[in-house]
Length: 148
Image 1: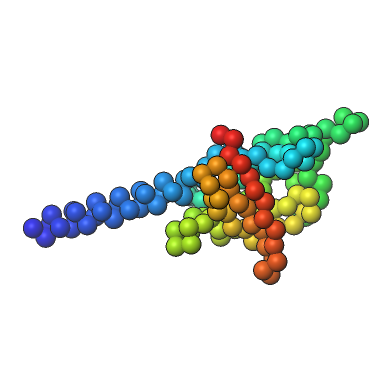
Image 2 (image 1 turned 120 degrees about the vertical axis):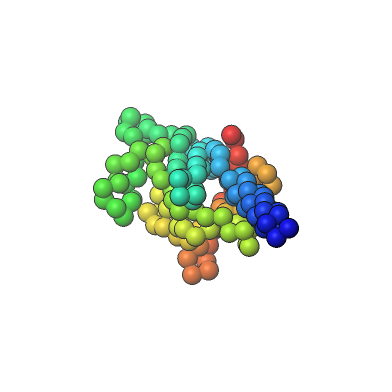
């Protein structure tokens, strides 16, 4: 009887963990942000360690009028300054916080300013992801719309 009870408890716990992991994985997909010449798409993927990575996969204007490719020239890491704008990694190590029902635990890179700030992500609706970046409580929120 005790063995059966232990198995039942184990099953219930694993079902709860699976449900939590499924909710965490809701963030995986491709999102569009910005508008006009500043439009971009970000692909969020799950890494082997269970955290999430966001990388730019498309920008509206990769080349300027002279045919020069837009690169990450403001990156504080000089070795990344030649990264094409459509390949910039915005964040890695993002984790789902089940208690707060949000993704957090990392910093997001702002290629326009060349800085990293604390990040949280929450869904406004199933297809609308709110990304908040902040430093010392002062921040900015962007809205990304799921396209895939």
